[in-house]
Amino acid sequence: MDGMISGSHNTGPISTQRSIPVVSMPVSNAARSISIEKRAQIIVLGNEKGGSGKSTAAMHLIVGLLRDGYTVGAIDLDARQATLGGYLASRIAFAAARNLPLPVPAALAVHRSEIDSRAEAEAEETARFQAALATLSATCEIVVIDCPGSDSFLSRLGHSYADTLVTPINDSFVDFAMLAKVDPENHDVIQPSIYSEMVWEARKKRFSRDRGRIDWLVMRNRLGASEARNKRDVGSTLDALAKRIGFRTVKGFGERVIFRELYLQGLTLMDVREANIGISLGMSHIAARAEVRSLIGAIRKPPPAMEPAAAVE
Image (cartoon, rainbow, N blue to C red; front, top):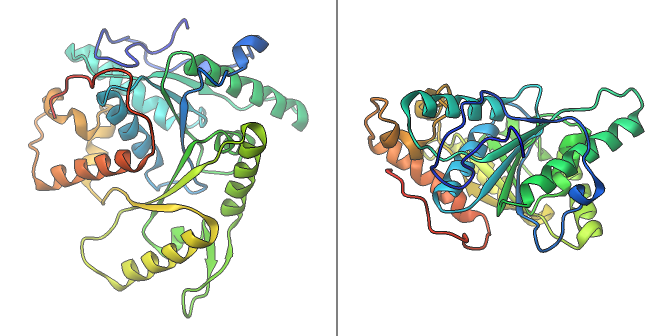
């Protein structure tokens, strides 16, 4: 596809393009239809709260999967904020400036419709999303979708196509409220939240569409190193909720400065040595990279069709 970011599954030439293409018009019905044979595995990063590390997790998943040998596509459904898109554009610019063969995904952004009619707007957004997904599914084994941190039709649509849904939350009852309402006295779950109900609706839509099921992972970010009372309480309440509404929990990323340091260059922890940006890998960085690998390992997926790309980690 013209204008697409190059190097989706290897460390070949890097495009100098600074932004990812936007799907603004639907393509033909043939292109929008996604055959079972060519359907990529879809990993969706979604929640309804900003600041949880969703786009950081998405980028590390993408690069980790690329380095494991998968052909990977990326769709940014928050095209206005463009956190993932900006990350990828910075990565391409950094690689081009230093002539580094960093792996990058094939990537597309899907904007919200500006049509006033709600029904027509949703139809247009559906067509744009399906066009992007069909385009990437034709060449990619895995497509990673970054959803906006708020409720929208595009976000709900993206959730409904997930094979794996990864929901990052900060390890506190402030973020837990996104999943469920909790009794303040004994921390018992009173009822699931609006977001959890939305995931339930997405699961029903997915099953109705193709009899597929969504494997839901809740990722506990910013876990403290010490065994604090809040950490134990959140963990036990999360385990109880997992049994009730059906998700798995996975340890996420700790509160580490390295993630913020790498954002501006579009880099991940898997790129540090290769990029040669003057960061010495200490025990904290090694632990952080292990967290990324743990997340990738928790996602159920087939082996890649090709050998992992050579990488200096």
